[in-house]
Image (cartoon, rainbow over all chains, first blue to last red; front, side):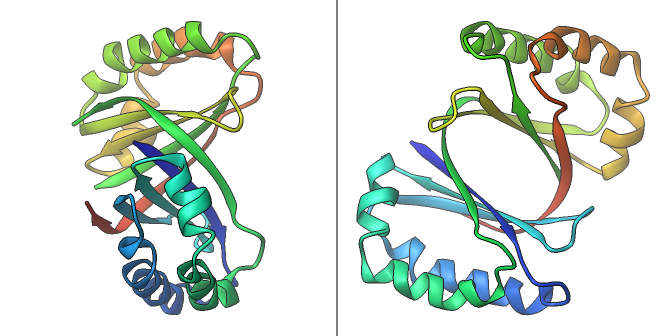
Length: 100
Length: 100
C-alpha cells in the first residue's frame, strides 16, 4: 500500500466552494480508478487556504501510471485545478507504523 | 478530532536509525499523552530524508497545551531532535472526509 500525499494551496475565500469541488472530484475520478484503496481530505486550521489530500493506492504505478495516464486525471484537474493558487506538491510514502 | 501533521527532514543516511527512534519516541511520549487517539508514521519514496508523522488528538489543546507543556515533549525532542536537518513543519487539520 502506498500513500499519495497532496499539499494544496487554494485562492483565499474559496474554501467552501473548494470543499465541495474536491469531494465531488475525488468521488467521480480518483475513487473509481484501479488500485484506489481509500482517501482522506483534511483542512488546515492555521492556514485556511491549505488542504491536504491523502490517497491510498495498492501500488505506486496505480497513481503515477494508471491514474495520471487516464482521462480521469484530466477530469480531476478540470474540477479542482481552477482553485489552485500554486502547483500542488505531491509525493508518495510507505507506511512504517500505524496505531489507533 | 484533530490531525497534527508533522513534516520532517532528517540528516541523509540516518533513515534506519531514525525509523527506530521515532517509533520509540512516539510510543514512550506522544502515545501516553492525554487526548492521544492514534498515529501514523510515513516514509517518503521520492525524498528518503522526508518523514511525515500524523498524530490524532481529541482536541487542539491536547497537543498545543497539554503535550507541548509537559515533560514528555522535552523527552520526545531529545529522542528525535538530533536527527532533524531542519525545523519540523507542524500544522493542525480538521478531517473533512474519509473513505476506505
